[in-house]
Length: 205
Image 1 (cartoon, rainbow, N blue to C red):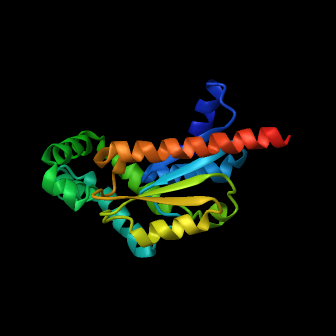
Image 2 (cartoon, helix red, strand yellow):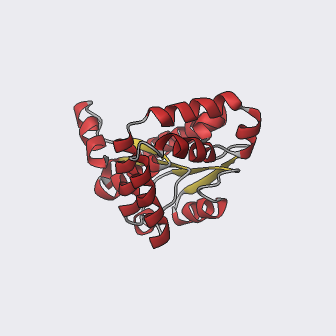
């Protein structure tokens, strides 16, 4: 997926970009950084972690991948697990958002979901890559995220030389869905920071 992103950039004539990913997209962004570091102007990581899965977590993902392919379990599995992507406040106060996210999850191809879970389980840790990434970087974490803890978000931020953490109140694992304006504002700030750094670099030259 990271290499496909690089090819898409090539087709659009984009040499460098600010790369942003949420959840699994964050893992893709970190692999892109590892494989195409010179093309990264800035980095945004939302609801993601820089460490590899523990053996237990990886086994749970592989088990989920098997169950999601079982027609007799799929609907129940989606209905039970998908709401966990959202924070407690969203679950309590925004039933339409919960229904929309569950509907999107139910519509996803089971084979694609299984592939994604297996790929995430097999991923490498990225902390060493992040420690040497001296570009503007933003970590966004939902205050009510039950899948990636605030401790992990802080750890990720502290690993990035130019890392900055934005915690989104009343949001869980999907800040772009639960708090779109707050998330957009934070990403615009990242773009402004990258733009200022590029201008300062050009002036120095």
